Image (cartoon, rainbow, N blue to C red; front, side, top):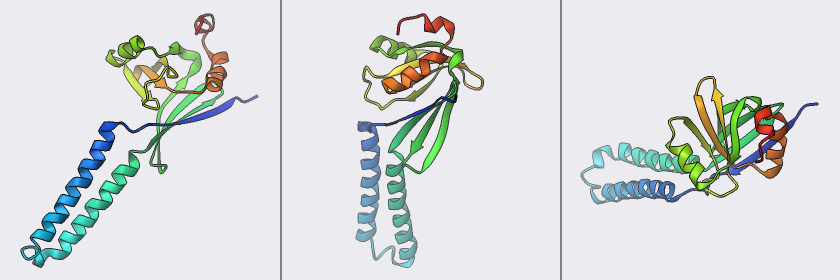
Length: 175
């Protein structure tokens, strides 16, 4: 019988994301004010200026939409896929992990978070960006990324679906 479970989390925008969107919007508004102020000087190329400003505002809009990120965890018969969905338009597969080949699994503590993000391993951060105690990590050997950590925010039901596929060494450990 096939095992299939999926779970989706929305990444919360932090101050850095909001500042980037605000800064780009401010720059576009400033450029518009400059264009209005120097209207007589730019009159010969007014069409290009208007087109450029419209393109800039549209670019800021697209940038803001793509900053809305969701992560989807899909577990199918021992393989876990982590996808990044940007603006509900574009999907990118971040990693596929064979759960039977993972080396570590557990809840993320502050000490473990510091260890993970300061290590030389590749880190796939697919959390909701709230750094809560509901985050989990797994360490695996990936064929293209090498030794890597996947940090994610699954539901308890999702974690329970993963457990039967753990390697024997991890099944015996208390999570």
